Length: 451
Image (cartoon, helix red, strand yellow):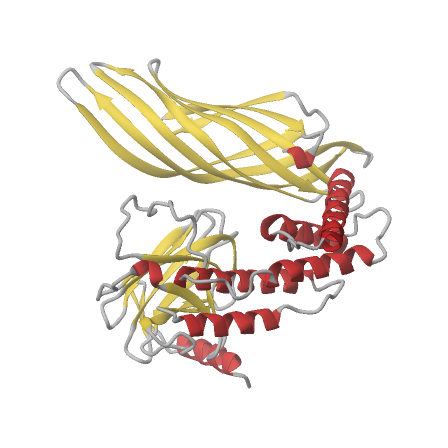
């Protein structure tokens, strides 16, 4: 049994030995673990380890599709010494291996402040010898709670496992990068997911090297791997039509890798022309697959929430939905968007204004509508819109103005006809002691890649 398998077996065994007390569990080594059931609306877990470090896991709306019992279990000893200077012993997040649709945010507030939090990386422990730095997200991103502490260290994770944190040296970072490049697999027609995962790991280790400063010792490694795999993929016999699920996924993976990571740049004119030709072929293939096999829809939404006669709040914007079709069978529909929240009004002597954003996750399916004889009459989109609203509410009376920030979850369901796109649908439903009037228009996107 490998070290990873041993840790997995031990984590399962340890979870059985937890003693449950009001959402907390006492682990075998005396550390206190926190346990919460979190569902599609998201949530957060927070726990302190024996050293006094605070560890927080924020799971956004849309990351889970059902209720899951999640455990945040501090470690007493680090699970890896690949980065020797530990900032905290680490944490195990259970159930191990659970994948998230939207990345969760792991945040550490060390009991003993580090000299430079920017030089600390949180990482996923893949083995005792190998760790993968977490993506820290946009440098300008504010803390989710609105308080951006310099003592906080954060990273984003897409699945549950064992995580740690430390201050890497240059030699440690380069050693991890060497291992990461060795993990990039040789071309396999059905190995595109493993290739994409290996690229992500390689890019994260390169970011760690960049964090430490100095010249990049591996300037073209990732780009050359992308070029090599795309060349082999383009040389493969293609299905006709090119709408086989694996072929669609491979096309998307390789195009995404080329778009995000680029292809190598050479001074040699012959090599440069070859790269340009490969890029053009990949772009043309992706355009063809998207036009022939993918459908995109624009959902224009206007929601008026009305309280009485004088106070109104408005959500308005467009969500771009991806709808993938395999052959003649309808499939999954998904999209995200940000809808501005505005409005206000007069209530007695008080004037109120709203200003914010609804961060929407739209998810659903296209189902076949049939008549009594079993003949198709329509394609119907059954969609759930859900997500968090973050807004500022300003209330002013003749004496003073008060401003406050509020956050709440908003969710609504839609049933729309694809046969009758470009038509408007209006629904009315209760909302927070008022009424919500939802007006939606569904339109097909003629050129999906231009969206």
